[in-house]
Length: 387
Image (cartoon, rainbow, N blue to C red; front, side, top):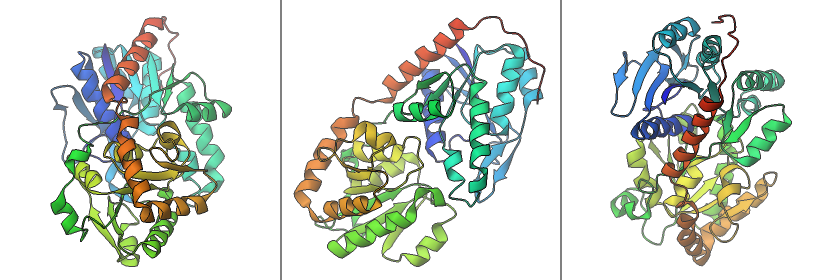
C-alpha cells in the first residue's frame, strides 16, 4: 500500500505517540509499503527527509506552550489536497487530533481517500490537570467529532475501546503496543551506571521514566517514594525525562537523581539497571513505560487499568491496585521496597508476560486492518474542500 501518516509528534521527540508511530512507520516500510510521514517542521529537520523505510515531509507548525521541543501542526488542508491529488495514497492514517490531523481528515474525505485514525491521548482527562475542567465536555466533543469522521479509530486497549464507545465513538478497533524486547532487556544492566547512582547490589533502585508534567500524578509518585524510603532507607530513586515540572521537582526532592533526557537506546540501560518501577499516572491510554519496565525485568506496581490491566497478574509478575485507591499503591510500593523475595519473584516473571507482544506481531495485525479498510472503500461522495 501507499500510506500517508499524519502526526503532530514523531521521533526524535520522546513520548508514547512519537515512539509508537516511529516504530509503525519503520516497520510498515520494512514490510514493503510506501510510507510518507507528514509532521510539523522542526528546526533540525527543515525539509523533506528520506529514511530507508519512509519519507518525512515537514508541515507548518508552532511550539507547544510549555514544551518548546514539541510542536503542533497548523491546518494544511489545501497543501495536502494538492500533494495527494498529484500522488494519491491508498490510505491516510491520522495519529493525532490537532489542527494538522483534523485538516488531513477533511482533505482525504474531499478526495475520496480512505482515512483512519488513532486515539492515543486522553486530552479530555488532561483538562482537569491544567485548570481547564470547564472545557472537558468540549474537548470530548471535539475528539469524538474528529474520530467519527474516519473509517476506523484504533485504540490501545479493549477497556479504552469500551469507554470510548460509551461516549459515542464509532468504528473502534484495538491497536495494541508492542515491546522492543531486545532494546528493553535485563542483559543491559550496568554496574557502572548503578555506581553513579550510589547503588550497591543491596540498594533497591526505584526508576521512573516519563514526561514531567501535571497529568503524570507526580504528587502521588513522591508519596510512594517517601514511604519506600521510610521503610527501607537503602532505596535509591532515579527519574529520567524532562518537562515543565522538572525544575521545581529538582529543588523539592534532593533525595532523587534526576538523570535528564535520554535516547531510547540509552534509556534501555536505565531500565535494566534499576529494580523497581512505580507507575502512578491515571491518564495514560496505554502506558508504554510499564511494559518497557517489565521487559527489562523490573518489579512493577501500578493502577489496574491500561497496560497494567492487560499485562500484570497481581502477585505473579507485578502488583496492580484499584484505580481509586492511591493508598493501596503506596502500600504496594512499600512492599516492593521491603520484601526482597517478592521483588525477586516479580522480576523473574515480568519479562515473560510481555515477550510474546513484539512489535512484529502488532504491526502485522495493524497492516491487515488497514488493508481491510482499503479493500472495503467504495467510491465516495466528495465533500466540499475544508481547510
